[in-house]
Image 1 (cartoon, rainbow, N blue to C red):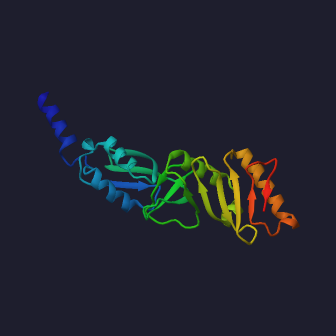
Image 2: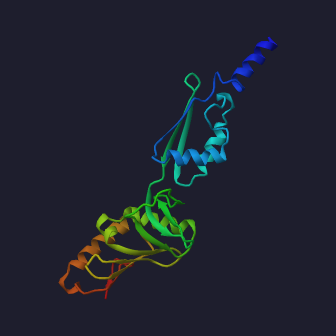
Image 3: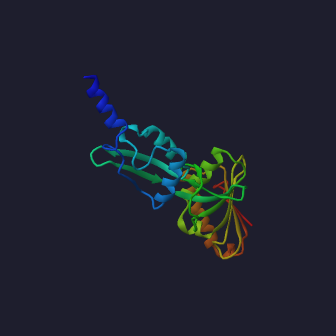
Length: 221
């Protein structure tokens, strides 16, 4: 009996009978980069490694250290020797200036991360303070903003106790918009409606500043 168990242990843990034959990544075109990063942090993830010796928690931990990956799942097929790693990349809603000479991105939950490939066409945000509440406020604001206003936006200043301030060329000229501090989905929707109404009025064709912090008494200059 001891010999049988020893033989099984050898087959599972040391022989190449039940070894990794193939490692597949799905969910991202950056599979080569992922494989390279994981090979550095999880040396055991390689073709030829006995299936029983794969440390799946260590692989998951290695993936979680890659900031632009939001979720992952790992499965192994003992018969075929295939390891399947399914990845869900984060979806950026804005680019921020980290102040470190490196472009970083925000997802809808306010999580800050880097990307292996630069992404263009995103809203550009400056944060007054590098804290989670400022990042979340920026992400939520942008996620709720209509596409045409985002396309016209040139800068967005968010964070701290100060109001959210946007500069825009929505009117064909530089327009500074003070959105205030309170910007729930309902409040922001109402402010957008007021904005559209105000800039459509003939007497407001030359305004350069618009304060929407108090919807009951918006101010144009």
